[in-house]
Length: 128
Ligand code: FES
Image (tube, rainbow, N blue to C red; front, side, top):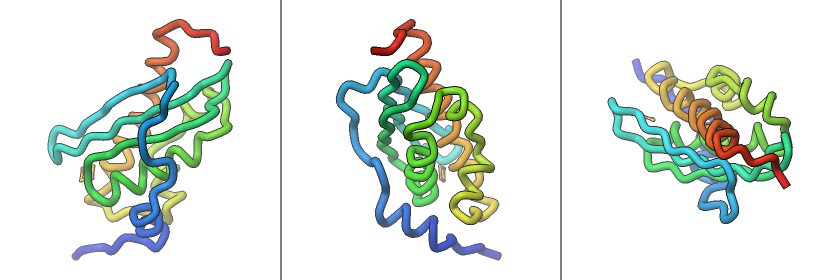
């Protein structure tokens, strides 16, 4: 049986928060899911140990767009240590759940955040 998307998922899908490029981003990562072919690019502007801004570009399904939108909302203004702990379950819960066939979309969003932070750290920037 098909589960439907929650209202929150639909809201973030139809009105994504923080969509687009982020000029001056110092942590950027692109992650993809081989099975569905969806691709998500995460841009973070990090100052010191804080995520100042987060934006995303997603080429993918509705759940991929909603989960990236929610993920950016959940990490903005947060310390990196908190952003790194963001789990796909937390993203899915914040959206009032996802159909089981769409859980992998939230995994992609959580992974994109982690990789973007790793990218920032790998550059050895101490923040401005
Ligand atoms: Fe693959 Fe949503 S169907 S990310």
